[in-house]
Length: 186
Image (cartoon, rainbow, N blue to C red; front, top):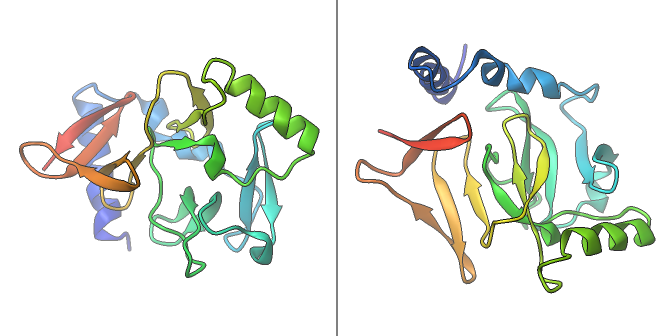
């Protein structure tokens, strides 16, 4: 039996598809990200070659972003590791995070070269990476602040100074996502 949230999101996607807001390829996007790893395996992103590598639980760093299996959504998702060693809610498409939030442990020379490349025009300030509908991180050259789209609640958050605040619309604080755009969801 699907959770009420999963049923709600399936309904949103079905309505979006009927309205022409989303293509069938987006509906099957998470099928593209099926990995040969079981639900117990946590993965770390290696940006220098855009690969995923398993990481032992004792090596994970609090505050860093990892890919893990979310039992509530029944799929692999990205999120950060909290101080209690549990993951926060699942990041959705459009989420923007600083390069410093990733656990970059590859060969130091390659990591430094990658950081220098993506920070080229940012005066050595952190660059922002954006999560797409296929669950992949790409550089967003125009972003200036971190933002989160929470797949589990439909809420959006933007970081201002040191904390995240919710992004609201006239009908509430839930959002849908289709074709690279957010839309108010009541």
